[in-house]
Length: 302
Image (spheres, rainbow, N blue to C red):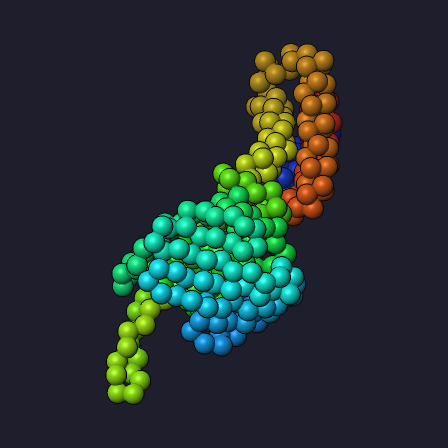
């Protein structure tokens, strides 16, 4: 009777642990959105003209304007009710971008686009922080990323803002300023013709294909620690009780107590870590904790 009940408990804990671990751990690694179909009710974007857009979100409102764009300089003006007003100035001659907000200058590789060209850029959180500082909105970050795509105007910035809105924890990642993780953006340059005053003009802009935000490696390590011990205990119970592997029945109790103690300490450590960061991984971490306790009890039982 007890053996049957124990096996059922193991099966239930196994399923629950795997479901929560896989779902939340995978979602922590990156966000990849089909941005062309993104419909976010919390964002209102109005294209005023080809060089200016107005953006209103649940936490920020303001405008992004390309105030100057010639063969040598491109200036993007950011006016945000939360992050203030400043300019990002891209010097096309020496390939640098200067921020009037932070006073920092970084190197930017950008060349004139070709029709149909696909381009991927990777911007670290350290670079974003150097240009726009600690942010509470999307406008500055979107403007900075768009600066890597020469020729990109309102359409590209609009799509980047929509994509960034999926990154609930982007503020924290920018504040931490990791040079090893950041945002990977892929866009394709499209052109089209318009007729004005009897003359045909060719216009172009980048169309966002994907936007992926990577979290810090420490977060990834922490998200693996808890499910590791759950999986370890489940494998142990599987081979000890289901397949009757005699070798495991002779494992010293002291060794099992030490392993269980380490597992519980790491579980508590992970919960405190996610709670301090106010991270969404706190929920699956709290779910795994009782699962680990239950498995620990079964491991210690003969």
